[in-house]
Image (cartoon, rainbow, N blue to C red; front, side, top):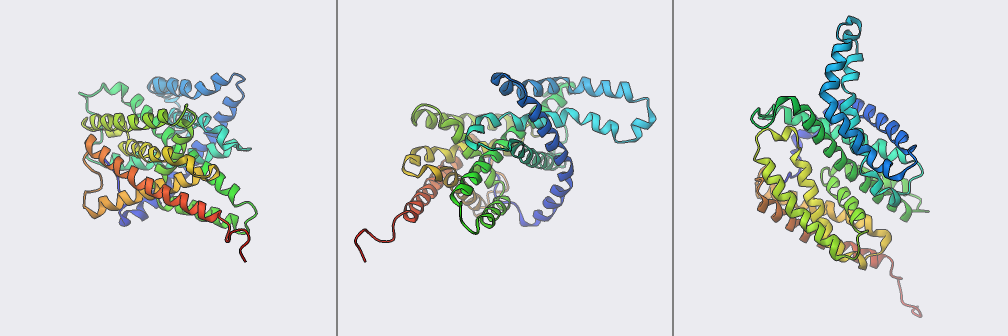
Length: 365
């Protein structure tokens, strides 16, 4: 299951919808920043780490009772019902769950980012997560399945499952954003003193936006690499990544067979995670031969290049907008990503080595 490049005819409607969803996404980002500030006030580190999961679980479980309580308490007041007050109150569980999904993966990359204004990363990740989630669920809502089948689950738990899916989606998107930000931080350090530093960074940001969702795959690969490379040696992270590709492919195939479940789980998210793990595998092999300060940049660029090339292959072979959700299909494309990413990393490492070689040998005129 793989999503190739966007159809160019869909670019304008997607940009229009993204602009419409920007305002509620900014509200969610502001809420996430406030919650992040409050969580950071907790003295115990383990409580700060587990708080996003605990808060999200509470709102996921209590979303339906809370909505009923709000309407029961304020539903008789005509003034409140006519204004935006009720709409804001009923959206608090959704906004909180997305905010917690954004905050949850941040501790894994906090030390590597070393930001002085951490809330900026949370705000940016929450904004992007909100836009992506709103876009994906609107597209799904107008698809062939608009409700969760009654035989799959009782309707009273549908809202909780949808919120759970949004928490997972927000966490994955935020992780991809954090990985992209880490690459930009390293690029900024390498460009220190360059007179066109800001222009180059702006060009990199624009390029990443234009190559979505490939940039999401690259950013997530950087985040996963940062999380896994702490494990002892290289063999354990590599085996973990390979196992994750296989298990996620099987899980994605099993879940895709349940009609209507795309309202709960965004299968594009599963595909991006599978590809991120796949393109990370060759990098774990090749990283010791690449300068450490270039690691996030080469990993991001190589993952994006591999993802785009696979998309072109899917388009060129007319495989459709999404391949069959078969585990062998997903593993096959993951293997293709491994090969293409390895080539990209080798080229990146070679260019970095050549860039740092002196123009002439000592003693030569």
